[in-house]
Length: 180
Image (cartoon, helix red, strand yellow):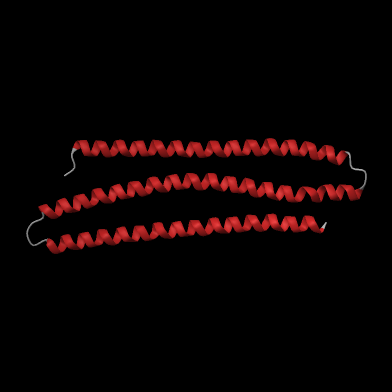
């Protein structure tokens, strides 16, 4: 049986976890805002420089060279921005995943304690029912672990694909710029 102190401690731990996750979420938002401000400032400065360069162009060939010279840096900056954004998002997600895994482990431990306590206080002859209950809990725990592993593998594959697409985009832009 749970005591009032145990319930209060559980609620306190849940509130602390929620506050910590809220803080992490705001940190992620702050990082995204900072990234966007930096990217906007850089884009404005580069646009001004590009406008000045266009105004000093003497012929169409020089204009084409100027334009093609912008493609590769733009693709690299876009890839870097996307990578930074992805890093912020995956960092925040991993914090939430860690908290969830910790909470799930604690809940499983508490539930197993309740099952064990119930088993100790169960009437004679209910050993089979208790064994079935423990088996069901173990099966559910194994299923949860399998899902967590599958999500981790999917996340790793998604990150690999993201990196491959970003590298391909930058390389394709380099190839186009060299042809001009």
